[in-house]
Length: 391
Figure 1 (tube, rainbow, N blue to C red):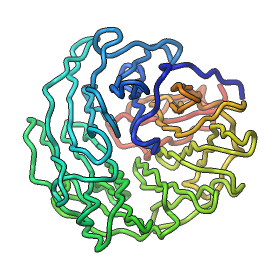
Figure 2: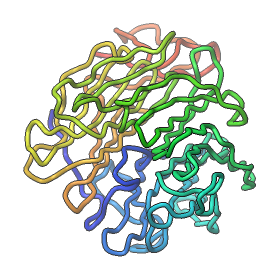
Figure 3: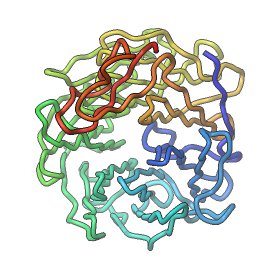
């Protein structure tokens, strides 16, 4: 497969200590937003492309940072109105802040800085570890973080009207927590809306939780084990955790039960990032088999991880490349942003051989073949996405 990789911004790095998480998001108009941090002054920037990654511009005035000096662990998510929510910390282990960028036409207005958690040694204050964010379509926002010193990990909810709820402790680990939290929302197979949360202890004891009442209460799902050190959480009618074990990429996915599958058993992998749409799972990761410096690759499964296609190399040269962040769009394409040397790059890979068809209630009467559901079976009177192959 031939693909073109585009420069997002020079002298920059991806955010969140390189952890594969929410750094790239597709907006409803098809444009892409990528979060980066300048390597010199550590200001955060939001870069947007309207032509599939070929050209990039700053959200806000050209060259204007959206964050402040010493930004760290910057993550983004969007709601159904394309408002952008950026959560970040000030330096390592510092307090947590949030900016909301409200969209109007083709521009965004940056709101005031909102304090999620101050820095101290006792939860609900934040100290050590990283952060994550998930925004529901209606603008309700959840920020996950932890406190290393009193071994607590949890979340704080921001309501759609901008008010904040009291932080909730999800896990009291009993030992220091290097939280590396991840959080996202999804619709479970039983039709319930759920929020998934992952928290990891300093001893790499990884635990997964879910909530069915918008974060008020949390249920323990599964112990991912001590090998699940670098994890990416993805959701979309299903829930999955991609992680590294002895250089191999594993996937733990929830269908009717939890199953564990091997994505790449070369022993040469690291830092996976996962996205899910129906039964289609995409995993991007660093692969060290072509060059010792590391390249970016991805794999796709169409059956919830049971079988995988061949590895596809996004890059293959002597420049060190790492920390991919993967996202998918409504056309079935794959969006990947990653760090290449001292620069941030992006590529979009169309889902080769397939196209998207939308219909209302009934499928076309003729002229199509090999219809296949992309997500759920049709619901009378509702729009559903189908994929077709051929003409």
